[in-house]
Each structure stands twice: as structure tokens, then as C-alpha cells.
Length: 201
Ligand SMILES: [Fe+2]
Ligand SMILES: [Fe+2]
Image (cartoon, rainbow, N blue to C red; front, side, top):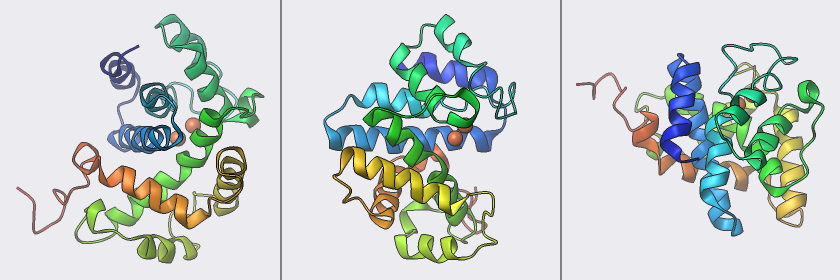
């Protein structure tokens, strides 16, 4: 499946611009890691881009993404990608991550939400002006994006680190990598300063 067809699937099922942006952010992070790890960026990117495509039609952990998987198969999405998507919610799907692709998806998912929020809360609204230091400050504030479970993110990064980095990838190095990947897609994500109050129009 090509990227354009996958994006059509996303646009058909997801209306919320924030959720679309989340999936584009995970796509960017996944492509970045695939490049570093000698894996296929297109396959990894598709897993990121499609992983929450059914959240609006299946908005519970029991349904998402289990009930979305047959739709993806029907649309011709590669089974490797479908399995990765199923494994990003083991609680609901019963399928746990086993491959580098699957561990990477778990590690990149939630942290993009924190990074997007960190960019949006600042006046510049530009990922390229954001630093790991600022993200760390937001991370430590328990009220900031309280929905992002810090313990869950740490566990996902640990598991990814063990699988692909001999346990040597730390949380903040990972955050820096994901930030770098997202900075490369700042325009597509709409987080290139265009939303800044003084820079609008
Ligand atoms: Fe999800
Ligand atoms: Fe997600």
C-alpha cells in the first residue's frame, strides 16, 4: 500500500484534526527510527500513520484497534502493519509487541502527544523552537497532559530499548529522537509557527 492510499483511509475515518496530526507525528517518528535501524521506512511509516485510524468509529479499548483490523485487511494493508497496529493496544487486542516495528510503535505513540502539547502551549507553536529541556519541564508537571501516563511511556521506551538498542536508549534520548523526527515534519504537522498569534496569516 502506498502512503496516499493510507492517508485516504485516515481521512475517511478520522475527522478530528488533532487525531490526524497525532498519527502523522507517529508516522514521522517511525520513519526516522526505521532509517536508523536499517528497516523499511515505508512499512514503519504506515504503521504509525494508520495505528489510530479507527478510534472515532471504535472509541473503546475493547474495540480499538481489534475491530479496525479487518477493515485494514480488506483495504489491502500488509499483515505486518496490521499486526503492529493490533499490538499497540495489547490490553484490548490481546496481542503483545514482539518485533522491532511493534516495540517502536509502542514507544513512539504516547510521547508524540506530549511533544505536540509542549509545542502548542508555547507562543511560537513551532516544533523547531522546542528543546528536549522544555519537554522535560512539561513532563515533570503532573497536570500537563495528565492523560499521558508517564509510567506507561517509560515502560514502552524501556522495552523498545531492550529490543533494538541493547537497553542503551534512554527516555530523553528517545524524546530527542522523536522531536528531531517531528521537526522534520513540522510543516505537515502544522507546527511550524503558523498557529502563533503574531505569525498568523
Ligand atoms: Fe491507539
Ligand atoms: Fe496513538
